[in-house]
Amino acid sequence: MRPSETNRSGEPAEAEGEAPSSGAGPGSPAWELLLPAASAPARARGRSLQAALREAVRAGRLAPGTRLPSSRDLAADLGVSRGLITEAYEQLTAEGYLRSGRGAGTWVGGAVRAARPRARDLAPRPPGARADFVPGTPDLSLFPRAAWAAAQRGVLAELPHHDLGYPDPRGLPRLRTALAELLARRRGVVADPERILVVSGVAQATTLLGFALHARGMTSVGAENPGSPQHDALYAAAGVTTVPMPLDDEGLAIGPLRDTPVRSVVVTPAHQFPTGIAYSARRRAELLDWARSVDGFVLEDDYDGDFRYDRAPVGALQGLDPERVAYAGSVSKSLAPGLRLGWLLVPEALADEVIERKRTMDLGHPTLDQALFARFVERGDYDRQLRRCQRAYRERRDTLVAALEEHFPGSAVSGIAAGLHVIATLPRRYGPEKHFLARVADAGVTVRPLRDYAHETADIAAGEDVRLVLGYAHLSPARIRAGVRLMAEAFRG
Ligand SMILES: Cc1ncc(COP(=O)(O)O)c(C=O)c1O
Image 1 (cartoon, protein in one colour):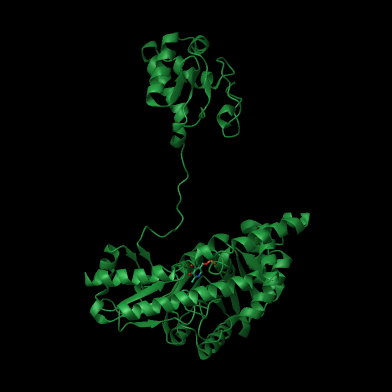
Image 2 (tube, protein in one colour):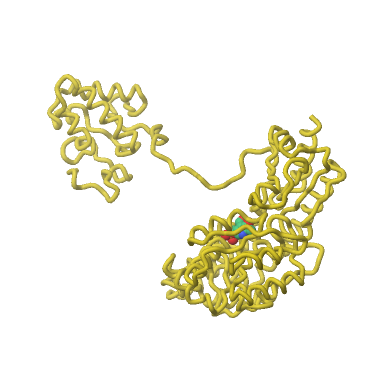
């Protein structure tokens, strides 16, 4: 092979699994790779040949299984003594890079495959804790694989060819129609399919809204404090800063909001993240009055609005004023965050900018995924999944509350009516918090204090109280019980 006859990645074609050439000469990969080393000064030539061969194997340019030319042929072709080639083959065989059999020739060994560079996995995943109460992940084993696979088969059979082309940047009409029905029914949203965008989760919805606000001159938004750390980073990506705003018992405190120059806020009214407060009817009305008075917007992050256990569902804020509230949700808690599938309902004033941003960002959401999810919703599979998760998570919540009562008597547990985590305030005797956290960490329990979600300005008394955000959805009841017991034992120890 000539130097110019490489494949697109610049590697010899043989390294990609084509039939290996076993002869020397211009058709041999070894010939090409060793040519520069063969013209090294005589004293260094042997070592250079070995180094070049070793490097070629290590980097995968000579793939495992590639048969090398005979020492005689290669030596003749490179114009070096046969002894140098024999020596190189022997040395690399001893090192495990090559293998040879009596009379069977020499080829690249298989063990070196591991030497190819491997992609690292930087996914945020739980560390190897004995018990992990970090909130944010549902039980991924509840993913409905069979129903999903059936929907996938159905969609592949029925999808018109044109749906495989670039979509409407808002999403497939079929899915937007299905979502409009679903969200109106389940969340009381005023859902015009023309104003729904299919997006990559609440995360992308947040950034898209950030861009739209920025374009209207709003370079800062108010954000709940304590609140989701995601909001700060996602708005920052759109050049919008977040201004931490305090909470009271009814939700985001309205007085301080009126005193700031911000004209938009991001809120989690169904189940405030992380405190679990459900915004009162009064606070909802006040928030909307405020938005109208400043000609601003409320961004409703309905991140776990599907899960409520003991009380009547609280409808989405968006239903009260769809021209002031942008509403975002996703399947991250109900199916799996890895699907990166969500929706955004936008007020008319923001719609054009948001749609254009979505178009220039990625030309629309993957259409197969959209069609699949549309079918999943249309056939009632999504409702079934929500009911199944609801049952499982209610049991886990009850288990966690009972375990806390048993092992940490006197604790106050709040935010339990909905969502996938609770707030537990342990009695003073378990404090100070720093010591408590150090002890449970030593025992292999991963747990987040409420303080971790707060900007410095939040009124979360430092020191004595132990206030924990305990995610339970991803843990089986047995693991929840074992985890709480471990925490208690760590403290006693
Ligand atoms: C409050 C809140 N909002 C938004 C998100 C991002 O959700 P998504 O996966 O839908 O982008 C998260 C992720 O955990 C979250 O906790």
